[in-house]
Image (cartoon, rainbow, N blue to C red):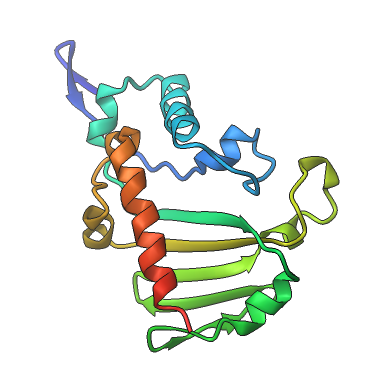
Length: 177
């Protein structure tokens, strides 16, 4: 924070990179359900612990966002992963894990589809089913993020924004072959 003559003027430069879902689960995992209200509370509490008020959050632009959906699938997860080929005209690639597929839909957007349960097979205490499927979108461009109703961190405190994120996931899934 920058103060001039005892009056708050703004911020110099601050970068935050965090996952409310992981923080909610004590930085252990993001393989369970996270309710919208719990996400909002986690964001508020995290910034509050850093000394920022809710009003301060309107000063922080969101420049990267990753959001997804965890689903418990009623068949072996690898069948789903193997069947995912394209999103629009972009081919999915398998990275170093056969349970993961990723597509660079544009220079600024990635679609990921993977076996979330496979990440936590060695941690049964987290109770993440082995056939948990995760479908996620990562956007690294302000114009795409703004279309979701997100400009600043304070926007992540609005329930309607999460409805936009969910609709965005559905739209992206509809492009999958």
